[in-house]
Amino acid sequence: MVTTISSYRLISQNLERSLEQTARQPTVQLESEYYMKNIGKVTSADEFVDDTRLFNYAMRAHGLSDMSYAKAFMKKVLVEGIDNQQSFANSLADPRYREFAETFNFDRYGDTAVVFDRAQQGTVDKYVRQTLEEDSGAENEGVRLALYFQRKAPEVSSAFGLLADRALLKVTQVALGLSEQTSSLPLDDQAALIQDRLDVEDLKDPEKLDELLNRFAAIWEIESPSTSVSTSVPSLILSGPSVVTIGDGLLASLQKLRIGG
Figure 1: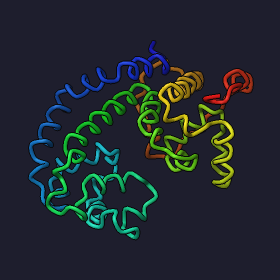
Figure 2: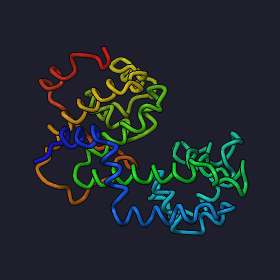
Figure 3: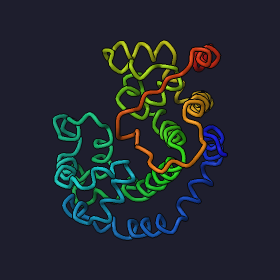
């Protein structure tokens, strides 16, 4: 039996090799080759969205696969861009739409929007990483959450950034021993609870980030033992977190020290 913490460590400590293995998967390789061969031919948001294969690849790379059907919605995201503070992408709470509009910035660069590395190899790299996380989640949801947190948390600048992302919040709550019920509190109170237990700047330190994620994986394993491969794994990145409760005795031993303290 491979536990959450051992699986996470195996992948994270050999991340480059894990990504290379994922990139060599036949389907990943085929889709990536198609993307790189054709993305440079795109000259408008309409052309981009209308090529379903290209568009779906880019959407998956940005963790937006569940919105691939919403082409009119995504065209509005792309056409209005991010330079105007009143643009559609800027009005959406989910930062992934702004990131998508910035990567494929047709509003700012017109028919040259896709010549930049972020729209080409940068998107392929994101696709491979996303696939690695999804494959890991098919066996253990906790590993997927840990890998997602490892990737996204260093970009967060405050406790509110953790609160804004359901998956980041889920990992934070589990690792810090915060009940899911704290999500019903006012945002300022939730942020204060996190700040009392975690210096968000520590998430930029690879060693301290790894310390937090090892704690998360250990607690997750106790609450959700890796006794078998899940046949139906919900995506906590895109849906509400489930309740995680931890015994007082365990919390007393795991939460004595403040992260980074």
